[in-house]
Structure formats: C-alpha cells, structure tokens
Length: 149
Length: 330
Image 1 (cartoon, rainbow over the protein chains, first blue to last red):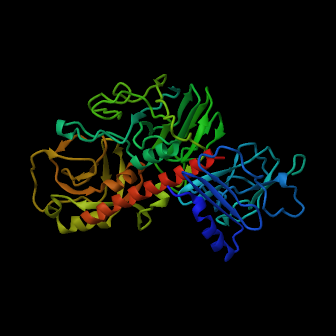
Image 2 (cartoon, rainbow over the protein chains, first blue to last red):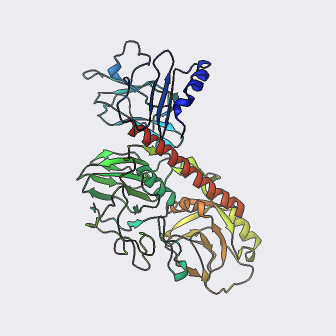
Image 3 (cartoon, chains in turn purple, green):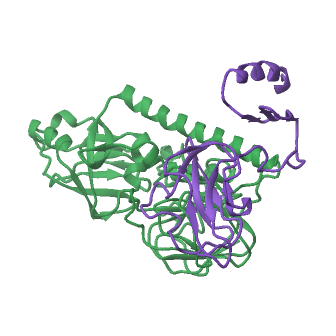
C-alpha cells in the first residue's frame, strides 16, 4: 500500500491555490493533516497517540466569548438543529442542557454525528443556521456560563 | 443478557430470514423491515444479518443486564434509557441495569409500525435451518419458536474483538434517504403477476390508480388491503402453488392480500402482482389504517431498485467504517 505521505507534496501544492486552511484525510492506514501557515503533522499507520495539538488550535477565537463556552465542530458536514425524523429542535432556547446531551447533529452523507454538550449549562444557543455547512473547528453552539441565563 | 420487562405482545427475535428452506415448505420469516435491521447492525459493527428484537406492540420495556452497545432503528418510538431521551436510528451504550423503554410510534416525518432493537454481538438464540428468525407457524427458531414474554432473558453474542467498538452515531433512515411516494402516499413498486391479464381492464387500472388501505387484518403473515374490488374477467380456480413474500393475491371478494414474512409457502388465489423485494421493507412499516399506492414496474427496474438499496447500504457501511477508524485513532 502506498503511504499518504507520498501524495503530501502534491496535495500541498494544490492547496496553495485554494483558501483551505486545513486538510485532513483519514483512511484505514492512518491520518494525514495539512495546515496552511503552520506545522504539517501526519500520523501514518496505527495511531493511538493523542492529538498532536489542541482541538482549538488554528481556529478563529470568537470575539468576547471565552473558548470554554464554545462547542466546535470536529468534522466537516451539514449542521442539523433537529433529528431528520422530528420537527422539534434538539435544544430549545432558554432550556438547560446536561453533560452528554445531543445539541446538534452533523450530517455527512447518510451519517448523523451527534454534537454533545461537554458540560451542564443553563442554556445553549446555536451559532449556525440549520442545514449550514461547517468545517473543522467552526463554532457550533454557545453554552452560557453557569449562573447566567 | 437482556430481560423483557413489559408484557407487550408479538415481539420476536428476527434476522434477515431463513432463505433456502421454501423447498421443505418452510417460510422465510425474518424482519419485516430488513433495511432497518441491516442498518441497526451496521451501526454496531455487527454482521448485517445479526439477530435483533422486532417490536410491533408498545409500550415495550427491557433491561440490559450487562454493559451493552445497542441501536434502535425502524419506527421512531420516542425511546428512553433510564428516562433519558434517545434519538432514533442511533447507536448508544447502556450500563448494567439500564432500562430501555419504547412508546407507540410517533407521528413524525416518517411514521413506521415496527422498531428494531439491535445489540452489539446480536441476540444469541440457536440457529435453526440457517437462521435465528422466529418461525411462528412451525414454532421453532427465535426464542423457543414463540413471541417474547415478560421475564424472558435473551443472551447476547460476543462482539467481535477485532472490530472497532461501536460509537455513538446515527444514520439517516432509508425512508428519508430513499423516499418513494405517489400523490402524497407511500408507494411500492409492483411487477404484474401471473394472473394479471385475467383481471378486467377496469380492475387493472384501479389497482394502479387507487389508494389501498392497510386493514386491521394485517400482520407478519400478510397485509389485507381494502379498496375498489378487483374482478376477474371469468371466475378462476387454480391449483395451489408456491408463493413468496410480496405476492399479491386476490381472493373472492376482490380485496387483495400481500403475503409477508410469515406467509405460508403455497396458495391458490390468483396473483395480480408482486411487491418487489427492494420495497418490501416499506410495506413492512406501513401502519394499520394507513394508505399506500402501487406503482407498476419492470423486471429490470426491480433489479435496479435492489442495486440502489444495496449501493446505499454499502455507502453507509463505508462511511461508518471510516468514522469508526477516525474515532478509534483519536
């Protein structure tokens, strides 16, 4: 099997011509990440070691909001505010959410990946429209700090 | 191990069915919605045909005695685990003692009639004639060849070690991904049957043009439909011959019966058509009292529909494998 690294130089050259900040490829052999204006990190082979850098690295901070209150996307797909079978949204305005609760779904093809609340919060507000396409690291949900809301 | 807590009737252990036994007069049995069963198993990394519990009477309640990964597919029954709401068509994890509860199917954007509780490793009942499906007519297969009862305890098979463990993830129900409607009603593609030409032109036209209601006399054996009477040009007396799920018979009285998974393997009523295999799952989810329509199709289009369903499942499997590999590596 050829290594994804063989194609890294070609991919990097193609990326030069785009405004893509981060390219992540995952396959059975491992994961390749190419980042504009940053380090190139690549995991090839069985990689069980943790993320080479923090999950929020390389993403734009949201003005005036501590990053601890922002739930970000871990993948590329379309944000759904409600399950496709249901009309009612997963999160209602001004209602508290609990740790592990599904705040939104990200649809990739036929997959529905849940976005989970990392902590309890008095309320959660969606930062992107239903159906919007989001990328890695994009802010999805703002959680109110405890005591607020 | 899973213990059945509720006394809900008509729940059975089913897999994809007992194929190849019709020659001995043994019907296929198997899940009424094989697409939902397959999807549930894919969500868990099971073999596609691992056995699951088919539910059609609610509420249903069961207790997980160990830590189990499970998936609920089919009708959206507003399920809860220890009182906490679960999303439909999604895999989750239960701790020992976790109580799962399903209510009646919700009137959601797609209303189904049957739900499937799939477990990582599959429901472990003995394989009889190549299948774990409950054969109610012959009283074998499944759990002691019968419907499940309060207090029944079902063994769960060992999940394959080499596979990535299940993760909390869902899939788009095939009813939404592969919708099929005609004039606002769920539709099924039908091949004209051996005696199609023996019905009056008016009856043949009505068969395609009119909606058909699923009557309360509809179950795993067959769906009795009501609509305009279908009349033969001349009375027909046929010898009994082999029939399979999907065959639409028209007995005297002209109200059609679609044979389903627990159908007997032979019958002598005239056959006006056959619901194609790729659409049987749609009929298996049609609630009693709902209306459906038939769409005339061809052999080539029936095979294309089967290929489309298989390709969609393969794509789901590929995406799930990629996503699990990605989660695993993090």
